[in-house]
Length: 247
Length: 247
DNA sequence: GAGTGGTCTAGACCACGAG
DNA sequence: TCGTGGTCTAGACCACTCG
Image (cartoon, rainbow over all chains, first blue to last red; front, side):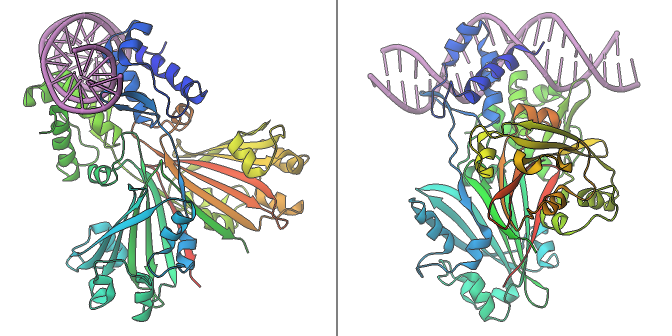
């Protein structure tokens, strides 16, 4: 026989999957669950903790516990690369979001640092070399939707618009092209993990929300890496989409 | 000021990130943590619970609590599609795993069902139409590494080798080609979420392990969907890799 | 047999949100 | 003001692993 709190979690989960408790619905209060199932409050909280960590529910002090909603936005890393923005003021991603009737905006910060080792490896830099980083946070309807940090070797980015702390209308990739380093090959790595505390804060993530990490390394014609872009996407808000044509 | 259990979690997390507690290392026992920090056992367990849900640690009754290891395997959905297996007995994925010096195997089960609504939508089937499903579980070194469920419209798969409950040496896609439905376009959708209880069990996942879900829809020359493949990948064991050439 | 984490109870105080 | 979830304590019994 399963344990008390697991059985309670199972019952509530079933109610959610069966839509007896649809997205947005309020669960019974902890006091009600204690009485309904004749268990202590700690047991109730263990059960709710399970569902919270599965991303199914969210609790707010003073208000109650509710079934979470999922409204994933589709992200096309390929298309955003090919398409030119309609308006010089915004990039392809903002175009797309606006097309879905929602309001995007973003904040950009630029710095020069010694990149973390995994980034340095991808940029083929030794431990001392510096990189320019463009930290970007993307928002939709005032809610943070993604972190995007782009790393460029300092030697390449220096004295270009890449170091400007504002959105580059024609795109950082265009700037790289103009300086003789167009990206002709891209390596994209995607993985899923739980967020680090800093990401949890920057993206205001709730417990039970994993992130998808998309790392794009761009290589120029000589085969040298010129850009590493790390995008951190909350799992409940994004679906990554690729379209492939088969030979 | 943060709460007691959060501060304790922060200290332990820091020790892990700083490599004072490297992967595989044992944490102090709950009794030791109680004494070292003068807190109750419930508080210690709250702190350990935070780290467990972040995927950082794992606890085993009777043994202790340990820092988790990550050994992601790289998966190339594109390449596996292009390359022909070296040996008729195994597919491209098994080839690749074997190339990394590890031992792959898989189990396959075939059934006919009414597909869930999200699959039916992708296959452009109405609510009553049936589909053939090839359920596959992939293992590496005897550990489950991925679930792969492929759905085919019954009309297409009937009376073909697709309905055979064993590995199709030349690949199910080749069978589709032979019956006049080669997949010329692929739509790939990737998202991150926490596993459902059934997936947790089939993949023997530990708490704090999200999954990446990769859904590939294949279309034939007429633009009709002929296959939907749903792959569920434990986040701690996989990195999905794409290589793109830019025009 | 001693030590480990897993489960469960009873009770307490707090900050916050809503009417 | 009252009900909500958030935090914390003290104590108990269990199943399991290890030497």
